[in-house]
Image 1 (cartoon, each protein chain N blue to C red):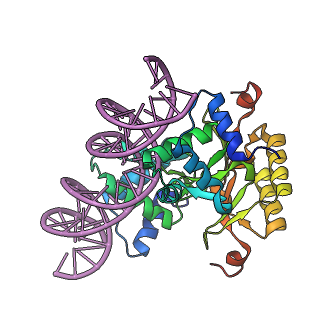
Image 2: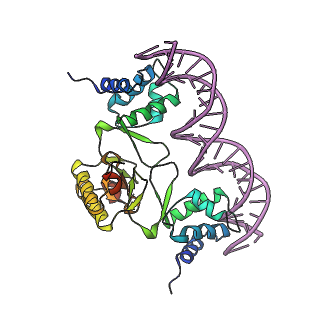
Image 3: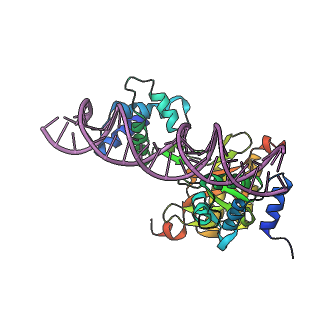
Length: 145
Length: 145
DNA sequence: CTTTTTGCAAAGCTTTTGCACCACA
DNA sequence: TGTGGTGCAAAAGCTTTGCAAAAAG
C-alpha cells in the first residue's frame, strides 16, 4: 500500500532538514481527521489541545505555515477575521453564501471554464485551489435572504 | 445637472434619519477624491486627518460601515490584514496576482460568463462587485515569478 | 430639546515574535 | 551534542466598543 499522507508529509519534513515532533504529528492528525475539509488555526488548536502533547497556539501557527510551504494545506481568502485553510489534496474552488454562510464546492467543470475564460481574455492564470466567490446560494437567492 | 454622488449620498443619509456631519462629508470626499478606486480604512483616515474636522479612526470605521449599508462602497476579500473597499459605482471583479500583488480588473464580459456558468451549474448567484480571484498575471505567469 | 454622532481610550481578535529551554536526529 | 522546535508571554495590527460630551435637526 502507498504511504499515507501523514507519512509522506513527515518524510518530506525530514527530507528538508526538519524534525518530526509530537506537536507536528498532532497538527497533521487534526487536519486529516474526521474529513475536515476547511479549518481555521483556532479549530486546529482546539483539536490538538486535547492531545497528550498540548502544543501551544504559536506552535500551531508555525506548523500551519510549514504545511503551507510544503503544499499540504492552502490558505483561503474568505470573509471574516480568521484565515481559513483547506487540504490541498481536496483542491477545489468555493462559493460563499452571504445569506447562510454556506461554503459550496465549485464543480471542476465550472472552475475550468472560469480559468480558461480569464486566461483567454486577460492572460491571467487562476490558482484553482484558492478561488472563493461570494454571492448567494440557490436557497438564499430564491427567498431573498 | 444631476446631483453629485456626494449630494445623493448625503440626501440618502438624511432620508434614513441620519445626520450630515463634517466627518461624514470628509470621508465621502476622501473616497470620491482623486479617482481612488480601492482603499483601506487607514488610507481614508490618513486623508481625512489632514482636513479641518480631523475625524477619529473610530468615526472613519463607523462611516465606512454606514456607507457599506447604503451600498456606496463594497468591502472586498483580498489577502492581507486590512479590509480593502472599493466604490460601488466602479463595480467590477478583481484578479489578484500572487507574483507582483497587482490588482487587475476583470472584463465585464468575462465576469458575466463566470456568473452564468456558476448559476447554471449550481444555482449560485454571484455578487459581481465582490469577486476577487487569486492567480498570476500574464507577466508573472510567463516568467514563473 | 431630543437623538444621533463623535472622540477618547481601552479592549478584542487573530497572528507574530523574542528568547530561554528542550529534544529530535 | 548541536541545530531546530517549543512554550511562554508580550506585542503588533486592524477593528470594535462603552461612555460621556458635543452637535445636528
